Amino acid sequence: MYTGIGASAGIGIGSVVIVKEPSLEYSNKPVSDTAAEVGRFQAALNDCIERTTAMAEDMKTRVGEKEAEILEGHVLLLMDPELTGQIESKITDEKSCAEGAVEATCDFFAAMFSSLDDELFQQRATDVCDIKTRLIKILLGVEDVDLASVPQGTVLVAEDLTPSMTAGINPANVAGILTEIGGKTSHSAILARALEIPAVLSIEGIVSSLENGQKVILDGETGKVFVDPDQDTLKEYEEKRAAFLEAKAALKKFVGKPTVTADGIKVELCANIGKPEDAAKVIECDGEGIGLFRTEFLFMDRPQVPTEDEQFEAYKKVAQQLEGKPVIIRTLDIGGDKEIPYLGLGKEENPFMGFRAVRLCLKRQDLYIPQLRALLRASAYGEIKIMVPMICCVSEFRQVKELLAGIMAEFDEKGIAYNKDIQVGIMVETPASSMMADVFAKEVDFFSIGTNDLTGYTMAADRGNPDVAYLYSTYDPAVLRSIRRVISAANEAGIMVGMCGEAAADPLLTPLLISFGLEEFSVSATSILKTRKEISSWTKAEADEVARNAMAMATEEEIHAYLKSVAR
Ligand code: PEP
Ligand code: MG
Image (cartoon, rainbow, N blue to C red; front, side):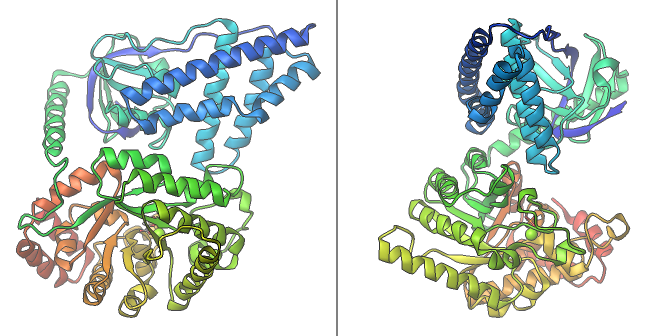
């Protein structure tokens, strides 16, 4: 048995087809006619742009807009004068052949992106490598591997599945995907999930260990892969596959339905996103709005700060796509575990307790003001609400409101459109803001409980430290009491209270959150239907009974075990 990263849920059973890239060897002799060589490169470049655009179009109609944007990103990279200019100079100045110039330049950019310790930059490095291979293939006249015509029941096995390879996949014929590299957020994982093909990634040496035609089973949840399985394993996994498909079909009946408890209490079910492109998936998964847009990703996926206009376009795009549904946009939350290398913020002894989020933004107004301006401008195009992270004291929130008031006064004077009634709320994710929830409730328009941080700060336990991992639990009575008091304070003051931490999607906590009076659940797009189903399975009276029992218990262990025992 092999184990990798389960990156796309489901059970795949089928026969191996190994996808090997053809050899791309060329002789790197200096060229004499550099002008002709630049011409050869430009012809290949145009061809590549044309083919990639066509693939993006195809992807858009067959898979989805968000997935097509990966390939559209490639087109933008291919048109980037920084990249093409360097390739052409290599040919002209160093007399390099076109293939050599493409390889050296792309490798340079890929190495630069890889050296940055951030998953998004790592992904950008993969994109540059994908483009490099495609350009060299066109220059050498080598055609792409055709994945469109593999037989039914195929399990594709490759070192990596690049977006250009995946573009041709027919999901009806592909039972699973196994690769040697890639993680949960790599493009191959995103595409596998969008195509609903089970996938296990990052299995060392899998390409050389398997042979074409071998029978395999893969579990896209646990990451387990069985080669030449025995009859018992095959039977077990056939049953698991049937159960998975049945559960998936059962969820479909929640599409287009309101999110209500079994006795008809309506709550709002929104989604968390990191990039504007993710909004399409929220709509596809029937989200009722966006409960958390983590804007720091706009700052991470690039080598410099996005301008006010770039941010405005990104926020406006999401607001328009959501067509009047609420879009809660959180202002920049960097620091802690979220680094932005080009800001050069320096290392801190204790980053989670340090200079992060609103603390940093209030000091670095050169970063904050353009973001607030962009948010206000975009508020003219949809139901945008502004959310401030890591708030500890009321004065921090008042300072943000003052900055907003200053911008609004300027906009009024200049006649710049914005929503004058825009709601401004806070993330409750520190014990300080939880303790002061009743006071905050009089100052802010809404709360969203950030249980990821609230759990860590309440328990004084770093999630990344295995020695204290036993303390990092939202089931701990201390954390649950904190959540309950925040919800009560909001309910009493009549302001909206939501939750955007991971706990909102935890089925064990659903009855407690219903009983406490949570009004909005914000979960990952893929958890929307599961959460709607979970909420629909409890009446308020049943949820109250569970909450009464759980909240009378003294330890995390007791509460956790009890919630498991009553889970639906
Ligand atoms: C949280 O802390 O619960 C939260 C949603 O924010 P993040 O995970 O981005 O810190
Ligand atoms: Mg947080």
